[in-house]
Image (cartoon, rainbow, N blue to C red):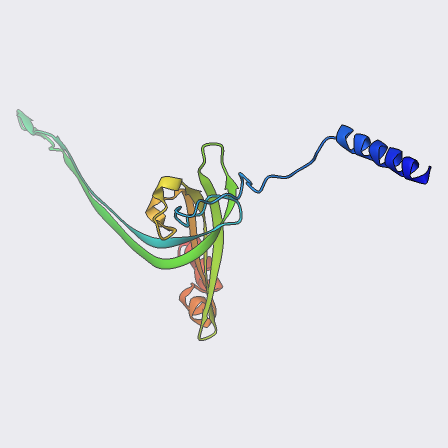
Length: 195
């Protein structure tokens, strides 16, 4: 009797187990899948990407202005009988020569690794990162933000800064040398007042 009860209980248990849906997870995860032959390029949030910053900019502007103005008023002398009527002459002239020239050149070379912050709907990567370097108690910071197209990423997971869209590159130095290079407060006030 006990054996029949066990068989019935086992049959009942097996029928209940067969009625429940089976749950299994795939070993394939689409978001993190990387083929063995694929390049090691950044493609998802949190991936690292190396940016080679090579920025050269130069601008020059010049202006030359010259104006000349001259006005003359002349009179005449007439004589009627013994009487002489006077002579009048006025001459006005003015000259102005002006010119100006501005010239500026900047160059920034750096290599820094940034992180993918967002994958945009068009598959572009929004990246951002910061690098800090201290030399002789002078803190140098490079901040970088921008968008990268996947096709611009090299096989070595490197992108040139000239290939970044909406790039914002900031280079800031802090310390004694940077402070001495800035104009003093009193000099800036004098410049505002035109002295």
